[in-house]
Image 1 (cartoon, rainbow, N blue to C red):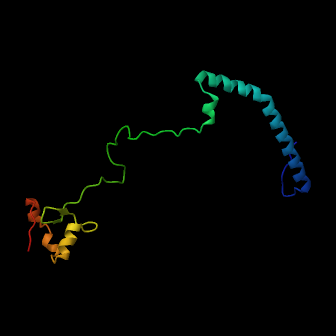
Image 2: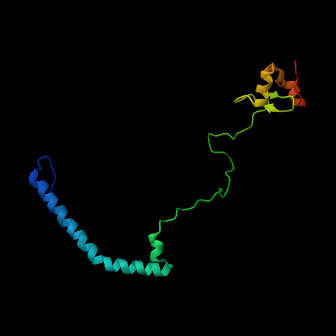
Image 3: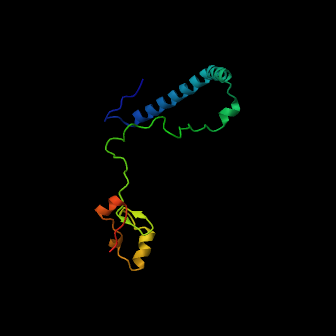
Length: 137
């Protein structure tokens, strides 16, 4: 018989619950002892059917491998995300180097600025951008 817990439960109820727990743990241990031979026989049968050795069971389990590449590429980008599009060049250097004007300035532009040139000297004007040449002042 299980003890019903209420606000009026007392110390005796706690003792009774602990006795019930101890009794149930004994029953669980006895049940394990009784069922153990049958479980072992079933495991041995399964191991033989699949060619599994005891040595294999003692090794750590291998991690499930994932495919390195997705099987199929999504037809369109996930909702809410746009595909990355490179920004058009805004500045062009003397050897044809290009920079969009975003992020840190490239070394070639910084070197020219140190030499006394102005950033605007390398600005690609909209009419010159179509022809691919830089207009200098």
